[in-house]
Amino acid sequence: MSFATTYNQIIAAVNKIDPIAYAKTRNYTNGAVTLLSPYLSRGVISTRMVAESLYQKGYKTYQIEKLLQELAWRDYYQQVWLALNNQIFEDIKQPQQDCSHYEIPAALLNASTGINAIDNAITDFYETGYLHNHVRMYIASIACNMGKAHWLTPSRWMYYYLLDGDLASNSLSWQWVAGTFSAKKYYCNQQNINNYCHTNQTNTFLDFSYDQLVLNDTPPVLAIQNTFNAITNLPHTPLPTINNQLPVLLYNSYNLDPNWRKEAHCNRILLLEPSHFKQYPVSNTVIAFIVALSKNIPGIQVYCGEVEDLASLGALQFISRRHPAFTHYPGTKDAPLSLFPAVTGYYNSFFSYWKKCEKYLTPTGFKE
Image 1 (spheres, rainbow, N blue to C red):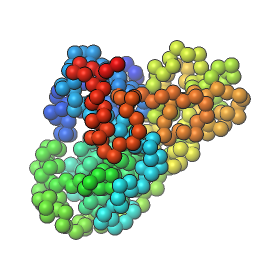
Image 2: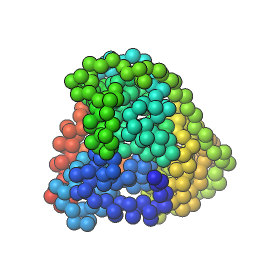
Image 3: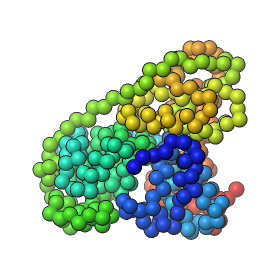
């Protein structure tokens, strides 16, 4: 599997969405998933744009509600990040129970758990940067609830390789599975994996009923731990050429929208800050994907350096999109794009957030 990077191809993928088939089959690894998450995470397209494209085709709210909810989960996690800041990298609601270590089972790193669907998915993941959402939950459950690992290190391992890596969605999803941002832990068993991954494996450490599974000890295959230390290899770039008479639009790994202030006369710079990627490392494949997506923005210059380096070039007017990872940017900050821009603040659960969002829906679209 590979992901296109030209804007026309991305819009073509949006136009191919079948929200009815998505609702019926999305949990299956061969289901009618949209495969849009890398473009949503990188800000090439927005959740609102995807929803509006479906309404424009004549779909009714009841037909696309499941897809709307899944899009809203992404926005909800962003709201949690905005509210809690770096606390999303700590246990939020309660400490992780039955946690034995802060590393990662080596069997996950090596794709050698013995669960065929999982090992094959991880092997492919290293090549493609993609994991089906259900498989992500399986992996997190194996790591945290069977392997007794604290969620943070394995979540960073997964984030490192994800083309759609979003710190909020990734971290909070892992916390949901580990029971630190939910009422209870999420467990998967072999029957569930067989059902949704179309395998028929038996006699594994997951081949138990759920009642028994929660009582089992850590399987020997998960007992060996490894650390996960990663670095980001950023390209070497010169200082950009700046017209000091024009403002500077700052793009980043979460905002690669070619339509953002499209008609404005500006310097356009994709800023890849070493300090950010030192704290949140990503793979070479992810960096290449980000740079490729930026090519949809006419006139953009890629600069690997700190925002302070740009500021030192002269009295510049900076404009960016507000984002919790880049609150240190100077200058004007445009509002982020979301499904329900009027619904802001922290909500204790997704469903309390969604209940508020529903008030802004009609049977055929969004309320003005």
